[in-house]
Length: 113
Image (cartoon, rainbow, N blue to C red; front, side, top):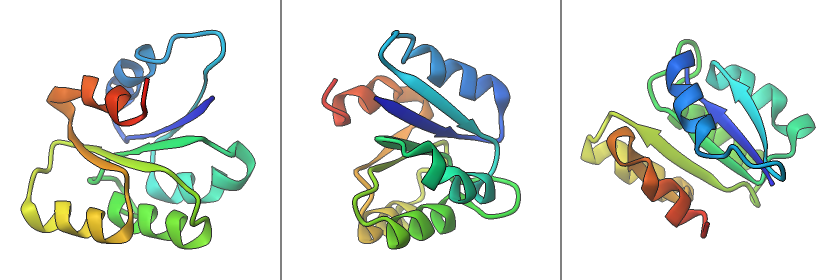
């Protein structure tokens, strides 16, 4: 399985990455939405874990772009932003979930792991 972690905070990427410390899991790290959109094709991730507040292209725009270009993409929003409008936008575009960073264990539940 390949997991793409998109967060501009390297420490947070490390925390999320540690959840997938298994030989059969490859982790691709991106520090921006722009980078995630550029690398999606070559990385071919099974899951994208996307923060919302990113430098450059924000996570909502990046998720929408990835899903529009790759309808099979599985994106989970992982964020500190719990605003109802952002949650609704994520649901409308077809993300698989919207998880608070304080509740990272929900990510694996959504992924069926």
